[in-house]
Image 1: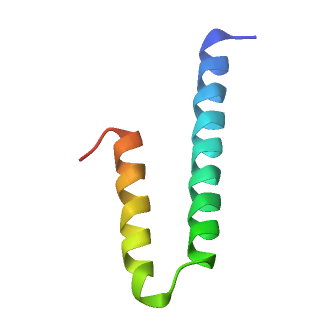
Image 2 (image 1 turned 60 degrees about the vertical axis):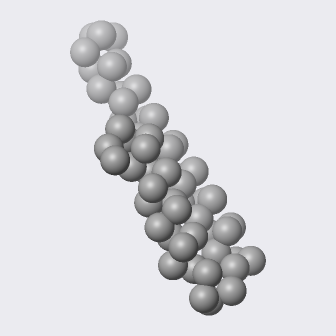
Length: 56
């Protein structure tokens, strides 16, 4: 298999796994959270995603 294609597939797979994990963690957290705290949970999830992507 072409190394360039393999590298692209790895990047896509890692991105899919990380995004699925972020959605799952956010959904599980939102189930046990009262409505007044949900905005903070979502901003915390966004902060983690920005940190993983390397942006502040």
